[in-house]
Amino acid sequence: MNKQPVTTRPALKQAMALATVTFLAGCSLVPTYQRPDAPVATQWPASTKVSPADSKNAKQNAPVQAWQDYFSDPALRQLIDTALTNNRDLRVALLNIEQARAQLGIRRADQLPTVNAAMSGARTPNSSGAITSTYSAGLTVTAYELDFFGRVASLKEQALAQFLASAEAAQTVQISLISTVAQSWLSLLADETLLDVTRQTLASRAESLKLVELKLQHGAASEFDLRNAQTLLESTRVTLAQQMRQRALDENALGLLLGQTISDAQRAQWTSSKLEQLVFAELPAGLPSDLLTRRPDIRQAEQLLVASNANIGAARAAFFPRISLTAGVGSASSALGDLFKGGSWGWTLAPQMVLPIFDAGRNQANLEAARAGRDIAVAQYEKAIQSAFREVADGLASRATLLEQLQAQQALLNAETARSQLAQLRLTHGVASQLDWLDAQRTLFAAQQAMVQTRLASLQNQIALFKTLGGGPAVTQ
Image (tube, rainbow, N blue to C red; front, side, top):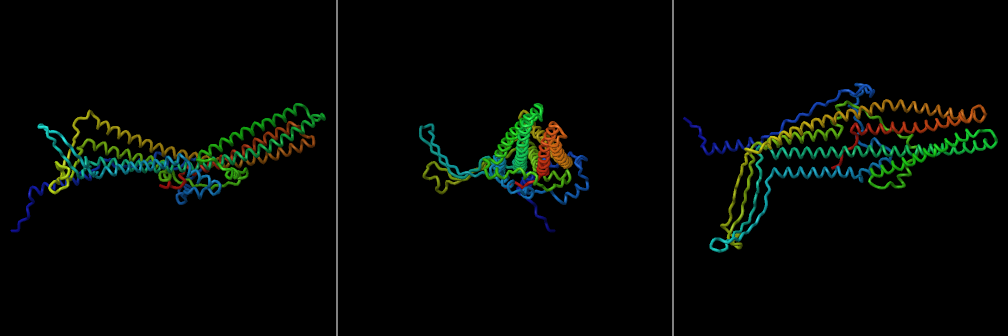
């Protein structure tokens, strides 16, 4: 009969120990991550005037991602390039990425032993008064943790998620910066247009005042007409001063975004006619669920949720034994000259296991804090989705109504322009009074200002949609 080989007890123990270590090394106490359901509707509100069919078709035509494709004006592109190079907020966000990357490197290094070269010497007197010398030199590994329960791996996973979150935060800052620069640029164009309209109105009302003064001298106008003309002129001067102040403030705000002083060449490109010529491409909204992948702030919130989830694994591992290893190899001698001679070499191995028995509830409190932190991260993630949904819904609703408002405002301006011309003609032929003509001038000026503001709101809304839909390139790391 053929006998099967029998495993000896020492070999069996070694095999069991190896299997145990292998099992524990692959053990992770991190809870299985599951992405929370998006707490928003599957379709946009009816006020956005986006039908379900339009949303589905938009998935095949994703929003413009590169800002260079969306903003075609060369002057605006130059401003954005300057801001991306010099803006301090973006610089801080990029440096936060480097800091998080360094923290990740520290956590990764914790998974490997640290080997140091060490050399020491001691001279101590004994009981007889003689001096005893001891010298040693070699390589040491100090308190290397054998990560059987995944505590160090959990901390590394947490650091990785925080690094990815910092990268998403930097992209959020970049998209916000691009959009804010574009909107500030539009505000300056609107300022120039309003100043141009106000200066023309001021010149026209100054001429009208001279004409009323002349009529008053010949008895063709009353002092009441004169005071009305003066009121219109001075109110226009007040408006001009306000607009000049607003333009200066808007220019200062843009300069802060650019991170440098605005040059005369850039300032010369802000012409009043450019605002009317600007046209941006219409962005398809897509489905609300698309925001989960488009918006970097939502991706950042999810990475922070992953980090808090990994922190639970590290807190759980604190309940289990922590095994560390201290080892060394080198040479020891009682004489410094004999330190590296043959026969003086040796090694040491000192494993240590620490099992928590009583800690006054510290580990349990840490675990409860980690779980609460995870619940907070879930709420923040859901809030980020809800905020993004609201921002896009607001932008789509505004787009639907601003187009109608812009058309109505243009029709109103055309009507007021025609009315002002008729009032001028009637005044010239003595059919209308000076008061009727002044009233027509007043309403025309208000309609011109409202037209500029409405056009500005429409263009800025399109930029806001570009931002809220997650447009913009990824941050270069």
